[in-house]
Every structure is written in structure tokens, then in C-alpha cells.
Length: 171
Length: 406
Image (tube, rainbow over all chains, first blue to last red; front, side, top):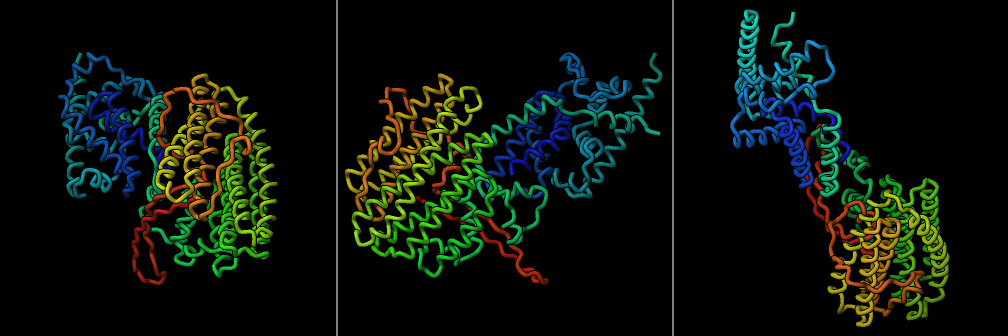
């Protein structure tokens, strides 16, 4: 009952937050959307409806909310993000110094991907969802999802390796 | 050797909510959950968030965590699941063929399914009350014999004893709220039924001799209950710190709901009872409303314990009015409502205009701990029938509206 629901929150809130955050890059808003998706899910359940895959349902709900949000506002440019002075350091656990230095970097880099590719990378590699579950969340067939994953991965690797190579030559 | 992409991914995995942030959201969720009622079908689903498979009847019965607070719903499930006999048995009286099913099976199953200790105590109180109702029904027909009377008295005594034991246990555990709730409700019920039994005995003198012993037992339990209740009131009233704040708020809301619901009941049933009784019942509700208003004033003054006690009083007054009216309607005998001081109640302050409201938001946990409920529940069952390869899949949806009027 309620305990299971709360347990679900404990288990999935972080990955859902990541999913929202990497899309909209606004921490407060991401939190709100995650909260909103849990509330909507609760309302759905108390209306007596059945949910087969709880995690997928949460993702779908959140994704829809994120899509609505991005329709509302244009995506922020990287410069604008810097202006806002957001500091992702507090989101990250205490980790090795090299990773911490990379944190702002990470978000910048991921933002270089387009929405669809980024979304798939977040789901598959960062949140470690299986292709089957991703298919369920996106409402696509597993085949389509696999193709998307591979394409996104290829693009990402190209992009990041190139960036690193470029950086190597910056003085 | 990890490439840049892999490193990036590793880094990204570290992004998460801070613990304070997580707590904040969780608190928002919890208060939303409190405001939103869960129906029984939904509770089943919440329980099975991970598994989407259908449930066999046995699993259904063993989903005990569903029935944590509401034994009335437990009873309904039992009735629906066990089929016709259990359901029919609910109306049985001593001497009927199905009476043993009612007492030996239905009541026992509900007891077994009820986990929460306050709910268990309330169920015992309810069972004791069922015995009194049976006595009333038989006596009103002039059909109460010595044998039935003895059985009823004995069973009543047993369950009433358990109620008091549980109250004592709550007190030891310092669970004042539960002790207080149970004892207040039980006392109301006992007083109302004593009144009813007395009136029936007076009007059906041929069974008076059989009714007396039961009334005597009830009287004893009333005295005990009143002692419990007043002692608990003193303890609760002394609690001025915040611990009773939420409980008091919930109790006030429950009282307001009860008053509103009983007002409606009186309206509906005015014509089925003596005019004087309906008028008296309405007057009683005014008293209850005054008590609630006084309770709200106490809330303002942060005297939460007193507010709690006042709301309980309001509920007792209201519940009593309802029980009497129900009995008058059912037995077609004038029963009447005795004045407050004859019911162990102190006077209620006259109602100044506190701007009292008539309806509060429903607090699920408080209303459910009252043992009298109009239940509308919808239950969807998927049962896999046939263990040996027979894949017949029965999907049944049953909506039940049962008024477990006391």
C-alpha cells in the first residue's frame, strides 16, 4: 500500500530526477516535475486503475511533463546556463576530485547531444534501463529502440572524443 | 581503458537528489497521500506494484496488509469471497441454522484479518454490539428465550472483556489516542443499547425476564467504560504539547463529518420515528456542534488534548442520537434520548457564534476507526481457477454498498 508507494519513491526518485534534469537542466523545475509525476501516479492508482510496470509508468508520466515544459520554454543555451550560475556540484556525491571537476563539464557535454539522443543515453547508460523497458516507456518497438540506442551511442562517442581531441590542442 | 564517453557516463550517474531535497518531496507526497482516499481495489494494486500477476483467492485472503485499518472492509471481502453462506449468515440470530457461521466463521475471519491493534479492539467492540443487537431483535419479536439470552450474554461478556483488556494495554503502551478512541466509542454504543434494551423490555414484558441479565451485564461494562473514559480524558487533557495536535485536528474533522452525516440521516428518517425523538435528536446535534465549536476554540488556544476530548464528546452525542433513531425505526418502539448528565456527560457550553462549519474534509484514518460505516467499496478480483492446467480465468468485479449501521 502506501509503504510500497513510498518505497518506490525511495528507489526511483534519483533516476527520475536525472532523467528530468538532463533534459531541462533546471534543478528546481526537475524536482517539481519528479514530485508531480509521483503525485499523478498516486492519483491514478487511487482512482482504481491498474499499473503493470510501475517504474515505466513513472517515467512515462515524467516524460510527458518534461515534454510539456519544453514546449513552454525554449531550451537554454549553454551561455545562458552559465549566466544563471547554476552549480551542479552540490548534486554530486563526494567523489574523486577529477570527477568533481568534470561535473559541469558533463552536463555541458550531454547538452551537446540532441534531445532524443540525450534522452536515450540517459535512460540506457546513466539510469541503466533495459531496452525492453525503454521501449515500453517510449511506446516504440524494441527494435526501434535498439537502433536509436546504437545511433545515439555512436554520435556521443564521436562528439566527446572529438571534443577531447580539440581540447588537447588548446593552450 | 575507459574512453571519454564512459567517464562521462560514470560522472553523470553520480547526479542525484540531496537528502534534504528527497525528504522535502517525500513530505509533500505523504501529505498528498493523506488527503487522497484509497479504495480497496487500489490498495490491492499498491500492494502488487512489482508483480502484475493475478491473485488466487488464498493470496487474496492473505493480503492482510490491506485490512490494516478497516475491519468493515475486511468483513465485506470475507462475505464476497466466501460466497452466499457467509453473506446470508450475517443476518442470522441465535437459533438460526447459520448463526454458528456468523459467530464462528465470519467474526473469526475478520478478527484474524485485522492487524492494527486499534482496529482489533474496535472489532471486539463491534462483536459485543452485534450480540446486543441480536438480543434486541429477538426481544422486540417477543422471541428471546433463556437459552439464546445466556449465549448472547456470555459472548457479549467475552468480547467486552477483550475490549477493556486492549484499552488497558493501550494505556500501558502510552497509546492514549487509541485507548481514548476505543473506550469512547464503546461507551457510546453500550449506553445506547442499554437504553434500547430497557425500552424493549418495558414494552415486551413477556421477555423482560430474559432481557434483564443482559442489561445487567451491559450496565457493568458501562460503569467500567465510563471509568476508563474519564480517566483517559484527564490524561489526554493534560497533554498540551503538540503531540495531540494532529489527532485533535483529525478528531474535530471526524466529529463534523459525523454530525453532517447524522443530520442527513435524521432528515431521511424523520417520518419513521416518534416526532419527539427526531426533535430531540436534532437538539442533540446542536449540542454536538457546540462541543465542536468549543473544541475549535481550544485548538486556537493550542489546548489540543482538550480539543480532542471535546470532539470525542461531540461524536458520542451524535452517535447516540443516531443509534436511538435507528433502533426506534427498526423496532417501532419509542426509546427516547435521555439528558446528557444521565449518560455520564458534562454539560455542553451554549454555542456562541464560532462560525461553526458543518462539513470538514474527510480524514480517512479517523473516520475509519469508527466502527459504524456506510461503505461503498468496489473490488476487482482476478482469480485463477483450476490448478491443473485449467486456465479458466475468472475476472469479477463487484461493487458493494453495505450499511453496517449499528
